[in-house]
Every structure is written in C-alpha cells, then in structure tokens.
Image (cartoon, rainbow, N blue to C red; front, side, top):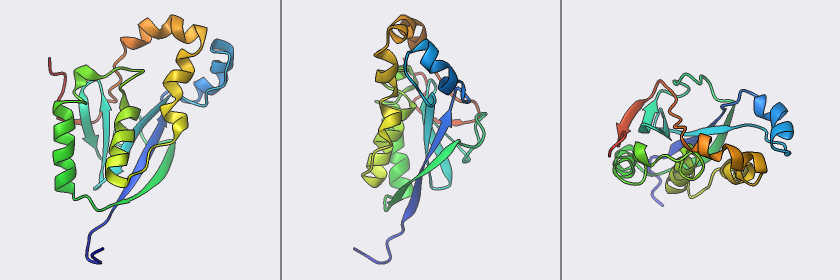
Length: 168
C-alpha cells in the first residue's frame, strides 16, 4: 500500500425520528421494544450524505432540520477519492436511489447508507438499524399501518439534492 495515499474518515450519523417516543410507545403499540425510528446518513469529505423522497442529498454535517445526530458511529477510513465518490453518488442518483424509488420499508435512507458504507469502507451499518423495518412489519399493528406508512417519503429539509430527484 502506498504510504502517500490520502485517507478520509467515514462516519455514520444516526437520528431518532421519534425523538424518544418509539422507546416508550412501541411496547404498547407493537408489543415489542424499539429504541428508535432511525434515519441515517454518511458523513465524509466534510459533508453529510443521505437518501430520501427527493433523492440523494447532501448538507454540512448536522445541517438538516434534524440538527445534530443522536449517535455517531465511526465506520473507518476510505481511500476512495472525493471525485470518484461523487461520480458513484451521481450514478446511484440516476438509477437505484432516485427519489421516486424511495420506499419507507424496503428502500430508504438506511438501505442507502448501508450500501455507501460498504462501498467506502467494506463495513455495514449496525443491524439494529437495517432490521427495523422487518421488526415493525412482523407485528400485527405494523401490518395494519403498512399502507399508510408506505405513502410516507422522508426527506429531512436542509439538504441539497445531488442528483436524481423525483425522476418519473
């Protein structure tokens, strides 16, 4: 390995969209404990990158209306240059992660950050985040709520859409 290779830090920002309400209400509503309703983003190259109903967006770290993250996980470092990363995101934004492809349970911000984390570091994001949709849908109440929740497109205000938007 070249000792002069530039390495960039990669972090996972984790936000609880329920602001703690999931922890107290989930046992009553779902019959099981959920610690949060997770929104995640990748922070690298000095920006925060996330996927929502508008497509792939970026902002300064903590720059959406969600404010600072509830938790930061160090995913490691990458040798992928910012130029290659932006080309990768552009490609994803034109195909897999267009805004119109957002699905709350199957294809969401956490799906995006998991894929991007693997591209940059070879590591996945924590399974308690990626397993959350199946945990909710495994309950009778989750099945009842699914049609309503499927129509929700989460796009935290404050980001700049990189590419893809709601292409139809």
